[in-house]
Amino acid sequence: MKIVVLDGYTENPGDLSWDEMKKYGELTVYDRTPAEEVVNRIGNAEVVFTNKTPITKETMDACPDFKFISVLATGYNVIDVNYAKEKGIVVSNIPTYGTDCVGQFAIALLLEICHRIGHHDKAVKEGRWENAPDWCFWDYPLIELAGKTLGIIGFGRIGQKTGTIAKAMGMNVLAYDSHLNDKGRDIAEYVELDEIFAKSDVISLHCPLFPSTEGIINKDNIARMKDGVIIINNSRGQLIVEKDLADALDRGIIAAAGIDVLDTGPMSEDNPLRHIKDSTKLLITPHIAWASVEARVRLMDIIYGQIKEFLEK
Image (cartoon, rainbow, N blue to C red; front, side):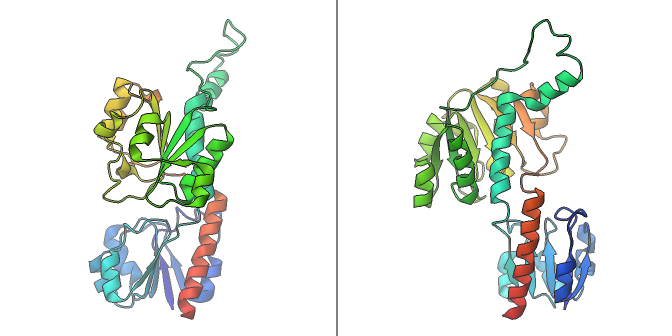
């Protein structure tokens, strides 16, 4: 059996090993694959792994030996899953590997907004502390989270992990989700979306991208939020209308935002968030919430389990 990994570098830039996969067939790993090379590199492979490299209807038609596609990530959006089903091609993803690190990262974005640790570290190293007239100094208001309300939109595994950490810091946690469960009730109070917008000091997005959630942070919903709210998003970039977020940051309606995902990544020159008046109000990281060593090891382990299960069917 031939196995191809189309874009393995993000998952494994060299600190992990693909050797376990070699037990199951002839393995070829590419760091990255441009669109024009996808068909050629898949060739007559039966098993293909991809992260962000699209696999289209045309690719499936051009590669007739396809039997199994695994996405090295949570979402299926790079695969034409409906056509794969028509063709009898099994498609899988890996939804559970990053729960701990993505929840941790959401809180890290929030804490950085509250304390500006990176900025103040830089200031000390530039000599500003030693030259300050006072014993200590700070350039931004420092925010204490205990007693404040965190509203979480999307209360699955990652949302619940984020809520658990926030609750341990003394925050009140509200949650909105279409599927309520007892574990969630132990962490948060389930409320309607209107209440999330009206009561939250911080809103953190952890919902999938569906037609009902696309652009959920928009000018109309921002108008329903408390002035000075903080927005956190390390879920899907398309959950936010970026022009509306930029405008709200400029007007001071939203005090700050921390995001790890954009509508289209990497960030383009014409992205409205690049041009806000005060860039210190916005933290942007390059889609790394998922990428801890521990999470990537879990992802690899799940990959091996998937291919083993597929071959045993």
